[in-house]
Length: 318
Figure 1 (tube, rainbow, N blue to C red):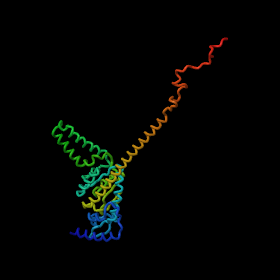
Figure 2: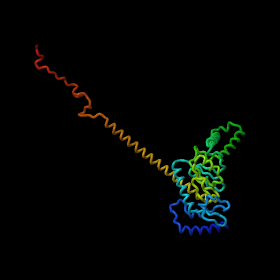
Figure 3: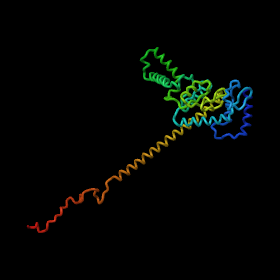
């Protein structure tokens, strides 16, 4: 009841502010949608991080309220950056191990074919990526054994051990099996919980996107989105916005590839036409049916007798 009364109070306050502020109608997410999702609710004042002060609108009943104007701006900024990453053909790794975010992030990342981690963060996932790749290849080898009939040639005990090991690997590494190289960026839900992922990304200079609540440090990430990182609706609306931005980037990449193919086809046809014209110009020209460079007299004069200077009365006597 207390949360509902607070929500009504803040709705009235934000609507009054909204009437004086000119919001950008081209924003990817509306102010009202964020308000309805409860994205403005922060943590208790006693748990706040002072570095979040620029993003805090007010305090009421011991709870910090996030400024949704800045949230809208930061969402647009992050979406534009993540769209360019997707357009370049690189991967974004989504990280969310907290219970209320797991399903939302997994569904969104799967939709755009991006890797994600919703179970425990494997230590050295980024800094020791080569070893992680070996584990993924080992998991792929187990899958191959199950399909090519190798399981039939081993003992029941070995089969059971391999099956258990394979199930464990799929749980923690199955969602990153297609990640053949380091991701171009990380999108993190709750940087406090995922502090190891943030630290590893910093070591490798990998850009980080994150939903930052009032208890987090927004300076630890490159693109901080001030919002409630505990409410499922808040997480879902931001995740949906990022997924749509990635879809736009992938669609533009596909169009660019098609345009490049068309250009290559046009250039190929132009080159073929030029080659044909050059070959035509180099062909020998003919005058009067005889090829150029033929000896005088040509084929027509082959049977004609050679003309001599001998007089008609025969050779002259000496």
